[in-house]
Length: 389
Image (cartoon, rainbow, N blue to C red; front, side, top):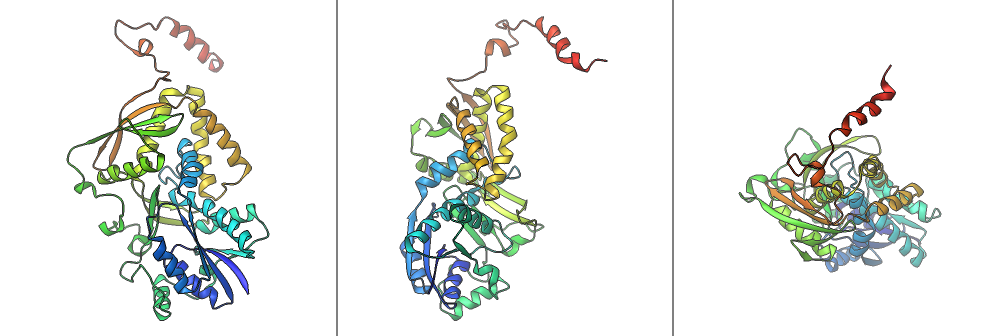
């Protein structure tokens, strides 16, 4: 019997996939990667076994997710098309890595996923798997099966008594982890339709947020967030705290038309409460402590870094080289940033750092000014000299 390790979420696609693969002669081993979804994994495991999996692995990946995936991407200030903070994209190479490891342990000849043929995640899973082990086969039921809609999948699941957490009235496809959440399908497929309140999972509506601003101070040490309001925290606790506080203030909602890797446009809804706060704070602190040339060059690479993550090219030589550069830039990114959260807006109220390159005596227009303005004339002449005819 052919053996496949399936990336299993317990959602509609992967639940149907277990039964579908089993009917075609596969021994299905389900792998659940815990990246902070907050699921009852004992129940998800039971659901997989009831649906037909011969064995279920549950991997606690949260620390690895934070240390090896979230943190480097935060330090790179990487966002795809200026809006998407890559929460879902970051989990795919991580989960794929562990799928390969379980496949080796189980002597499976293939790994599988429940990704659609028009999405990005299929690329991220498969490219990663092929980099780590080119001999492993890929099984992708959603690209092959007979179902033309999620409604047909629901009917299939009901016929075969497959337990589900979706209905035909609420057919959102939701992917959640501790860094953010993505929501798509249903009425959201029409970019002209405003998302209803039930689409959002982590954030309050702006009109329901507090009527007074919330101030929060984030402390960094060498590019790593370590404190909230002076209290030292492990990063997982810090993210959870920010998700709660920022979520109540409606921070981190994104509604965008996104250019998928496969060449189509897609309307996506995202929520990143903690990530939004940390990106804004980290980027602002860098402006205080990095010199102009280093800052500008780093900014020129941030878009490329985001593309590598989005395109599933995590385990590539260029990504490894960029990581080394980004890590070097973080040596002086130490200090605190005070954020003002108010009805969907997150703005920097103040920042300070022992590594600050800001010099008040040079920037001031008061009697404390030590800048010799007479030097400006010679500088301007030399600066413009190459362009004079």
